[in-house]
Length: 367
Ligand SMILES: *[C@@H]1O[C@H](CO)[C@@H](O)[C@H](O)[C@H]1NC(C)=O
Ligand SMILES: *[C@@H]1O[C@H](CO)[C@@H](O)[C@H](O)[C@H]1NC(C)=O
Figure 1 (tube, helix red, strand yellow):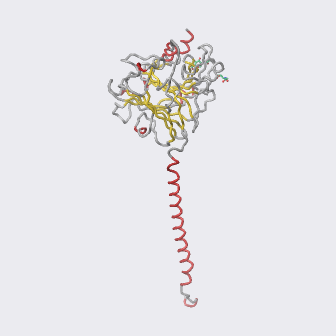
Figure 2 (cartoon, rainbow, N blue to C red; figure 1 turned 180 degrees about the horizontal axis):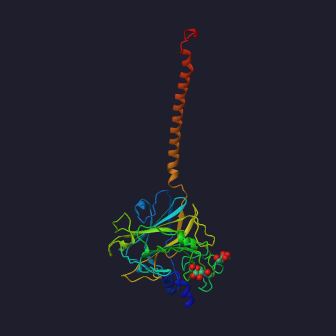
Figure 3 (cartoon, rainbow, N blue to C red; figure 1 turned 30 degrees about the vertical axis):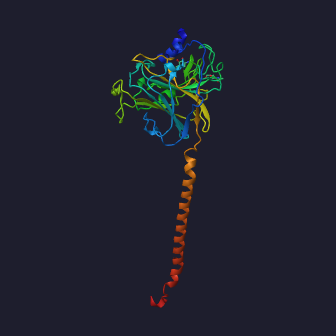
């Protein structure tokens, strides 16, 4: 137990809590709605990664009821409202907008050495399947315990996790992968706690690049993101002194916006890789403090009790409709222009050829 605590201390109190409290009782059963799909349409140049949702308003999202992740019983649904998940890609990056109704509450995380406790602030996580055997339930579902899980014993059970806890992040500012943490070679984020993790099960969860037996300096945090709440009325930019940014208890919606390249340079099976035209499996989780009481790791809400398919659409849906018409008209305009130019040219050449003949002959001796 001491070893568990010592190693995990580095990652944060939050991770310790989750590992320790992630015990369940009874059989796991799940009846998920097979109709659910998150669709990432192709749309370049539409999204600014600033936490604001204005640029997403014309895009369809999927609305989810939030149920406790470990006991998905409709009676215990998140009372604050629904969660809407939207996705989009621009051919290079994939973007996510996670919005969830909730009264405004914010408390700043307490910074410590190597560690920021952010459990008293709202927090959101995206999880993706990497290995083919990775189940939604139990974060990959590897049966090994903390002492025995390795990239060999748990091969195939890898899941990719983004965790953003807003306790140290200024709204509207960008957090996630930064040169300092990426130079160290792991998925951490010392500025805003928007971290890139991987896991085989809840007890075997690490920042990218950090391993159970060895670290690998090629780990990177490939995510970026920002958050916002609809009750804010300052749009010019907050600084840390403005905390808590708005008064507590105001009705509204939390926005969490994320992006990541479709492909990363991961060589360790710690990042999901997206394929245009392909499908991945994802889930979204949400933590919030109740009446100022910090949440604990396993006490989170989730959009479904199983993986939700995520489709990365081919770059066709927006463009194939528009392309034939616009390219035909562009071609005909060009052809018209060419024929006008050649008409003018032939008139000019004709004039130029004919003109010298009309010049009067002047005998040399008259000069
Ligand atoms: C891996 O990195 C973590 C955090 O930097 C460190 O605490 C740990 O001792 C390292 N493990 C090994 C085996 O080097
Ligand atoms: C497991 O991780 C270690 C350390 O990063 C690495 O050297 C090794 O090649 C990995 N093994 C497999 C099977 O991926």
